[in-house]
Image (cartoon, rainbow, N blue to C red; front, side, top):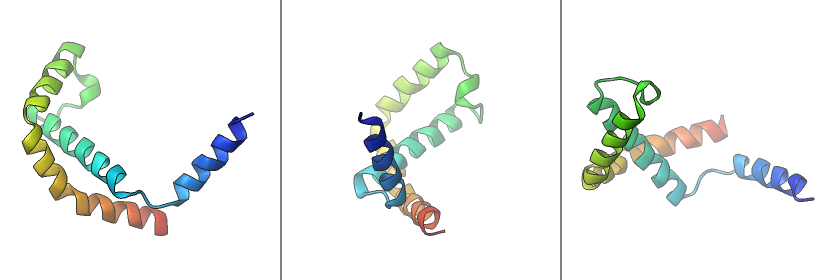
Length: 88
């Protein structure tokens, strides 16, 4: 019953440019991934053991202010990528 409505909603949402909070969340995620990559010396997250992943996540949680600063710096780049993706 709702599947068609959900599909239409997803299609409409994919056409719109992401809002501020969504972009901020993406920037934060990108910042965490960049810092994790730096900690693992370039090893992809999927190649790490679960214990190592957990350890890195714990360390990233302690580095929250630094992650937020990096996310703030990445935000314009992410916004520009979003706009270019939506406008062609």
